[in-house]
Length: 217
Ligand code: SF4
Image (cartoon, rainbow, N blue to C red; front, side):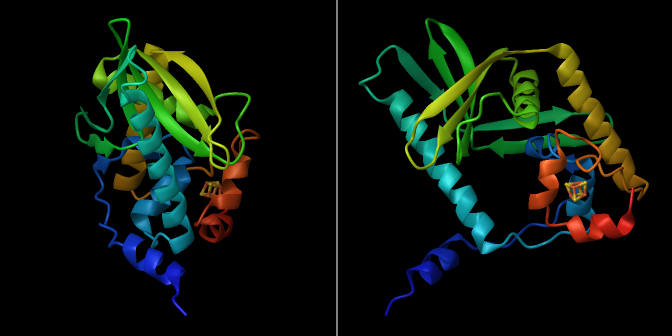
């Protein structure tokens, strides 16, 4: 008997590079700041189940890129299907290769698309996804974009158009500053998700729930 799960797990497993205080990733600011803080102070291995979920997301992102660049869709032009982002602040850097980000051209205009795979299509754009997209628009100077959700089991999509909002981008940069200071000063941030009705659901998926509950508010 061949264990195909084992073959897949071996294929997906990779060594996690330790994170460095002062170098942050664009994707980590939309969620709970305390969780991100833990991921620097107390890094945990990403489990096989989560690696599979990430890989499924990558495959769907490739699928959307292929559809956009296909000659069957001549009106829309794929410009890039993954992008490096770099924002230099006074004493820290936000950088990373964003592999769920697509740039396309339609009627001479450039757009960013952030692709999110999901179990069920949402009725509204998720706030933390919108924050990521705003940060990407800020970094790339492309000020129009879409959040595109694709349902895993039937490939149906829903999308939300977004325009650059300078205030929101500045608010995201302020969150990075808060994160940086709390890491530098070794001061645990408030349990942001736990304290917010809109974000409390994040706690059910958080690998640091036990540490967080022990630390209190
Ligand atoms: S349990 Fe909730 S509040 Fe605590 S770190 Fe995780 S996501 Fe944040």
